[in-house]
Length: 306
Image (cartoon, rainbow, N blue to C red; front, side, top):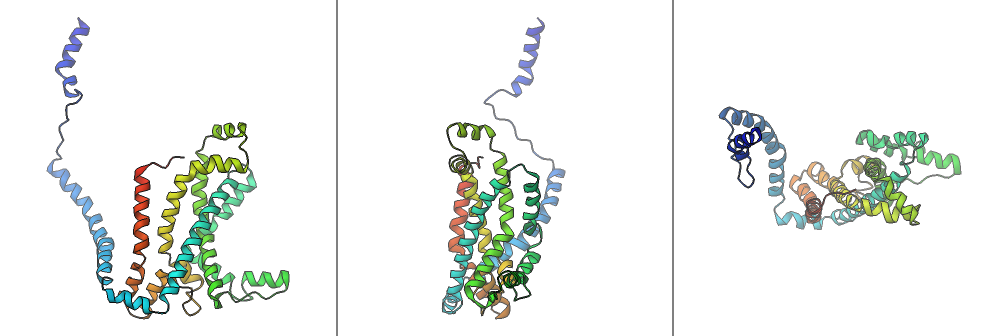
């Protein structure tokens, strides 16, 4: 009787409310809650419009004149700058990501001196970009710089004047960028490696996959999806990189190591042509938009599985 009575009560009460297939009624917020919600959202919406939406819309409007792009192509600095940007992004991103993936395996070892070395290794990333790039710049300045001083002390040779040559200056920018940001991605891949179960490596070792074969057949396939997403994201960031080039080589000599971000700055402030500066930066959109679409599709289509 007790069981039957209980069932009868539940049938008339709670079970009817949670019957499967029956849509639940939406709960309407009272007026006071809506007012508080609007009060909290309004400042963020205002900041988003003022500092994100409005500048982007205005930039697109200012850079919408076709004559600006004709002026860009006619400028002697623009096409070499496009080449510099392609080299800076292509080499900077791919070398950085590949070395970060390899070094993450080195820092996986459980030795105290390797853990101590990891703390030193991440210092360029921990420090602010301005200090890091200025330090790298001064290491390459003449005999008083660290690099040329070591060349003179160890080998008795005079080092090159790094920022008087386009390719040496561009190479310095790329190396400085890799030096600054490689520790960040190394930590990302190190954290990803730590999530791989040890049983997978044990099984692969039984099958004869050890050492480099373990990396090729186990580690890289498991991290390939993450590696691709990180590479796309890093490419987006690197296309807009300004600090490294501006502070390391300064775009010299004679603007031969500029990238699109620094060239746009020169146009906007040094030449007092802000519309042309925005157009120079916006000329990277044909590359940016496909990368953004690929990144969004990759993230939406599948989860990053480690």
